[in-house]
Image (tube, rainbow, N blue to C red; front, side, top):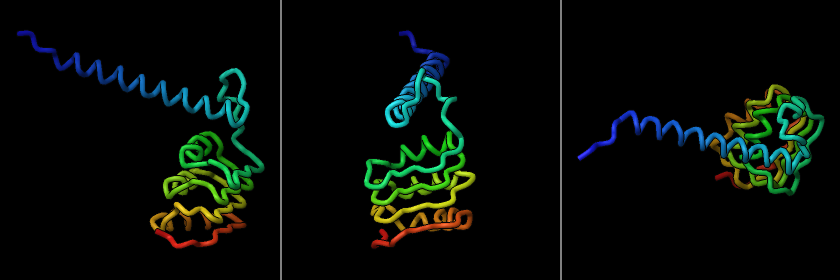
Length: 136
């Protein structure tokens, strides 16, 4: 009876990790191409500073904010009113270096668990609008 070596399993795990990263990279590239018209698979063409994003009443969710905040560091005005973001999305917003105006009206999937992150963001911005609904 031949037993597979532990080295074999380590190599399989490494391959699996690489494949997952490749899928993630493809998914992010698709996001930028679809929503921001990035051409030639060139993620380096994404600006690090944006004047305004208006995502009001859209399908924006936490994954969008992860992609955005991993590449863009300064957003002057960000409107997320009535979007699908959750506490995790609020956490991603703390990664921005600068944000001047943030709107979170009607984001019903935000809970009181993110209040520390909200306060961290509020301390760095000039204009903040968030109308509280019943927080979970």
